[in-house]
Image (cartoon, rainbow, N blue to C red; front, side):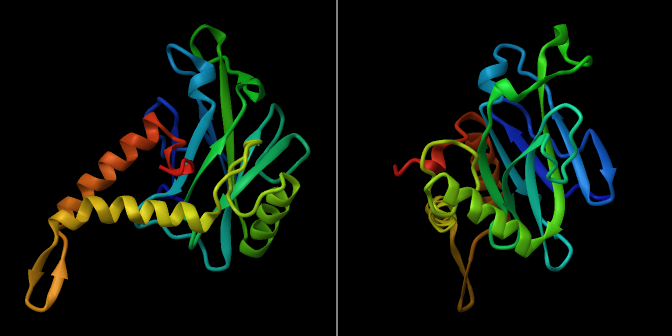
Length: 208
Protein backbone atom coordinates (compact mmCIF):
# COMPACT_ATOMS: atom_id res chain seq x y z
CA UNK A 1 0.00 0.00 0.00
CA UNK A 2 2.84 2.40 -0.80
CA UNK A 3 0.57 4.35 -3.17
CA UNK A 4 -2.63 5.91 -1.79
CA UNK A 5 -5.68 3.77 -2.54
CA UNK A 6 -8.50 5.67 -0.91
CA UNK A 7 -9.90 9.16 -0.76
CA UNK A 8 -12.00 10.34 2.18
CA UNK A 9 -14.08 13.51 2.06
CA UNK A 10 -15.67 14.43 5.40
CA UNK A 11 -18.52 16.91 4.97
CA UNK A 12 -17.12 20.42 4.90
CA UNK A 13 -13.48 19.31 5.00
CA UNK A 14 -10.72 18.76 2.43
CA UNK A 15 -9.95 15.48 0.69
CA UNK A 16 -7.81 13.06 2.74
CA UNK A 17 -5.67 10.42 1.01
CA UNK A 18 -2.90 9.72 3.53
CA UNK A 19 -3.76 7.38 6.45
CA UNK A 20 -2.85 8.35 9.99
CA UNK A 21 -1.46 4.87 10.58
CA UNK A 22 -1.38 1.37 9.11
CA UNK A 23 -1.69 -1.21 11.93
CA UNK A 24 -1.25 -4.10 9.47
CA UNK A 25 -0.36 -4.41 5.77
CA UNK A 26 -4.08 -4.70 4.96
CA UNK A 27 -5.58 -2.13 7.34
CA UNK A 28 -5.51 1.64 7.47
CA UNK A 29 -6.67 4.19 10.02
CA UNK A 30 -7.72 7.71 9.09
CA UNK A 31 -8.17 10.25 11.87
CA UNK A 32 -10.65 12.89 10.74
CA UNK A 33 -9.99 16.18 12.56
CA UNK A 34 -12.93 18.31 13.68
CA UNK A 35 -13.87 21.27 11.50
CA UNK A 36 -12.86 24.63 12.88
CA UNK A 37 -16.47 25.74 13.30
CA UNK A 38 -18.70 22.73 13.95
CA UNK A 39 -17.50 19.22 14.72
CA UNK A 40 -20.97 17.68 14.58
CA UNK A 41 -21.64 18.93 11.06
CA UNK A 42 -18.22 17.87 9.83
CA UNK A 43 -18.55 14.33 11.11
CA UNK A 44 -22.17 13.63 10.11
CA UNK A 45 -21.32 12.27 6.65
CA UNK A 46 -18.19 11.00 5.00
CA UNK A 47 -17.55 9.89 1.43
CA UNK A 48 -15.05 7.08 0.88
CA UNK A 49 -13.88 6.14 -2.60
CA UNK A 50 -11.13 4.39 -4.53
CA UNK A 51 -8.76 6.92 -6.01
CA UNK A 52 -8.61 7.09 -9.83
CA UNK A 53 -6.19 4.46 -11.07
CA UNK A 54 -6.13 2.59 -7.75
CA UNK A 55 -6.87 -1.14 -7.76
CA UNK A 56 -7.44 -3.57 -4.91
CA UNK A 57 -5.87 -7.05 -4.94
CA UNK A 58 -7.99 -9.58 -6.89
CA UNK A 59 -10.86 -11.05 -4.90
CA UNK A 60 -10.81 -8.33 -2.23
CA UNK A 61 -12.91 -5.34 -1.23
CA UNK A 62 -12.51 -2.54 1.28
CA UNK A 63 -14.48 -2.84 4.51
CA UNK A 64 -15.17 0.51 6.15
CA UNK A 65 -15.39 0.85 9.93
CA UNK A 66 -16.11 3.56 12.44
CA UNK A 67 -13.37 2.90 14.98
CA UNK A 68 -13.76 3.62 18.68
CA UNK A 69 -10.90 3.92 21.22
CA UNK A 70 -8.75 0.81 21.40
CA UNK A 71 -10.18 -0.66 18.18
CA UNK A 72 -8.63 -1.63 14.88
CA UNK A 73 -10.27 -2.07 11.46
CA UNK A 74 -10.61 -5.84 11.74
CA UNK A 75 -14.20 -6.04 12.89
CA UNK A 76 -13.64 -6.18 16.67
CA UNK A 77 -16.57 -5.33 18.97
CA UNK A 78 -15.00 -1.90 19.50
CA UNK A 79 -15.53 -0.94 15.86
CA UNK A 80 -18.73 -0.53 13.88
CA UNK A 81 -19.01 -1.83 10.33
CA UNK A 82 -20.31 0.88 8.01
CA UNK A 83 -20.18 -0.82 4.63
CA UNK A 84 -17.80 -1.57 1.82
CA UNK A 85 -16.45 -0.41 -1.52
CA UNK A 86 -14.63 -2.21 -4.28
CA UNK A 87 -14.91 -3.24 -7.92
CA UNK A 88 -18.36 -2.30 -9.17
CA UNK A 89 -18.95 0.04 -6.23
CA UNK A 90 -15.97 2.36 -6.06
CA UNK A 91 -17.51 4.91 -3.69
CA UNK A 92 -20.08 5.28 -0.95
CA UNK A 93 -21.42 7.93 1.40
CA UNK A 94 -21.70 6.95 5.05
CA UNK A 95 -23.64 8.67 7.80
CA UNK A 96 -21.66 8.62 11.02
CA UNK A 97 -22.48 9.90 14.47
CA UNK A 98 -20.33 12.59 16.02
CA UNK A 99 -21.11 11.01 19.39
CA UNK A 100 -18.90 8.11 18.31
CA UNK A 101 -15.88 10.36 17.96
CA UNK A 102 -12.98 10.28 20.34
CA UNK A 103 -10.80 12.95 21.86
CA UNK A 104 -7.54 13.44 20.06
CA UNK A 105 -4.62 15.18 21.80
CA UNK A 106 -3.63 16.61 18.41
CA UNK A 107 -7.00 18.22 17.81
CA UNK A 108 -7.30 21.94 18.52
CA UNK A 109 -8.61 22.59 21.99
CA UNK A 110 -8.91 18.86 22.68
CA UNK A 111 -11.92 18.57 20.39
CA UNK A 112 -13.10 15.19 19.22
CA UNK A 113 -11.92 13.48 16.06
CA UNK A 114 -13.53 10.65 14.14
CA UNK A 115 -11.43 7.61 13.23
CA UNK A 116 -12.27 5.64 10.09
CA UNK A 117 -10.74 2.20 9.59
CA UNK A 118 -10.40 0.56 6.19
CA UNK A 119 -9.57 -3.13 5.94
CA UNK A 120 -8.70 -4.95 2.71
CA UNK A 121 -10.71 -8.15 3.12
CA UNK A 122 -12.25 -11.00 1.13
CA UNK A 123 -14.77 -9.52 -1.30
CA UNK A 124 -17.39 -12.19 -0.61
CA UNK A 125 -17.19 -11.63 3.12
CA UNK A 126 -17.52 -7.87 2.75
CA UNK A 127 -20.50 -8.25 0.39
CA UNK A 128 -22.23 -10.59 2.83
CA UNK A 129 -21.74 -8.18 5.70
CA UNK A 130 -23.10 -5.31 3.61
CA UNK A 131 -26.22 -7.35 2.85
CA UNK A 132 -26.62 -8.36 6.48
CA UNK A 133 -26.27 -4.75 7.61
CA UNK A 134 -28.82 -3.66 5.01
CA UNK A 135 -31.24 -6.41 6.05
CA UNK A 136 -30.92 -5.44 9.71
CA UNK A 137 -32.00 -1.91 8.77
CA UNK A 138 -34.86 -3.22 6.64
CA UNK A 139 -33.44 -1.86 3.38
CA UNK A 140 -31.82 -3.25 0.27
CA UNK A 141 -28.31 -2.49 -0.99
CA UNK A 142 -26.44 0.69 -0.08
CA UNK A 143 -23.36 0.98 2.09
CA UNK A 144 -24.24 3.86 4.37
CA UNK A 145 -24.63 3.54 8.10
CA UNK A 146 -27.63 5.78 8.66
CA UNK A 147 -30.94 4.80 10.10
CA UNK A 148 -32.99 6.18 7.18
CA UNK A 149 -33.62 4.16 4.05
CA UNK A 150 -30.77 4.47 1.58
CA UNK A 151 -30.97 4.06 -2.21
CA UNK A 152 -29.55 0.85 -3.58
CA UNK A 153 -26.01 0.62 -4.96
CA UNK A 154 -27.45 0.35 -8.46
CA UNK A 155 -29.48 3.53 -8.02
CA UNK A 156 -26.47 5.44 -6.66
CA UNK A 157 -24.34 4.25 -9.58
CA UNK A 158 -27.03 5.32 -12.05
CA UNK A 159 -27.20 8.78 -10.47
CA UNK A 160 -23.41 9.21 -10.64
CA UNK A 161 -23.40 8.13 -14.29
CA UNK A 162 -26.33 10.44 -15.07
CA UNK A 163 -24.53 13.33 -13.38
CA UNK A 164 -21.38 12.68 -15.42
CA UNK A 165 -23.29 12.16 -18.69
CA UNK A 166 -25.26 15.38 -18.31
CA UNK A 167 -22.06 17.35 -17.71
CA UNK A 168 -19.86 15.68 -20.33
CA UNK A 169 -22.39 15.40 -23.17
CA UNK A 170 -21.94 19.05 -24.12
CA UNK A 171 -18.20 18.48 -24.60
CA UNK A 172 -18.44 15.51 -26.95
CA UNK A 173 -16.93 15.67 -30.43
CA UNK A 174 -16.02 13.44 -33.34
CA UNK A 175 -12.65 11.82 -34.06
CA UNK A 176 -13.34 10.05 -37.30
CA UNK A 177 -16.22 7.66 -36.64
CA UNK A 178 -15.70 7.76 -32.87
CA UNK A 179 -17.42 10.11 -30.46
CA UNK A 180 -14.92 11.39 -27.91
CA UNK A 181 -14.88 13.59 -24.80
CA UNK A 182 -11.75 15.62 -23.91
CA UNK A 183 -9.92 14.45 -20.80
CA UNK A 184 -10.02 17.99 -19.45
CA UNK A 185 -13.83 17.88 -19.51
CA UNK A 186 -13.77 14.75 -17.36
CA UNK A 187 -11.29 16.42 -14.98
CA UNK A 188 -13.59 19.43 -14.74
CA UNK A 189 -16.55 17.17 -14.00
CA UNK A 190 -14.59 15.28 -11.33
CA UNK A 191 -13.54 18.56 -9.68
CA UNK A 192 -17.11 19.86 -9.60
CA UNK A 193 -18.50 16.49 -8.49
CA UNK A 194 -15.92 16.23 -5.68
CA UNK A 195 -16.73 19.77 -4.56
CA UNK A 196 -20.45 18.99 -4.40
CA UNK A 197 -19.83 15.77 -2.47
CA UNK A 198 -17.77 17.79 -0.01
CA UNK A 199 -20.43 20.46 0.51
CA UNK A 200 -23.53 18.27 0.13
CA UNK A 201 -22.53 14.63 0.71
CA UNK A 202 -26.09 13.35 0.70
CA UNK A 203 -27.16 14.76 -2.66
CA UNK A 204 -26.91 11.38 -4.42
CA UNK A 205 -29.29 9.90 -1.86
CA UNK A 206 -32.04 12.32 -2.86
CA UNK A 207 -34.26 11.59 -5.82
CA UNK A 208 -33.88 15.02 -7.44
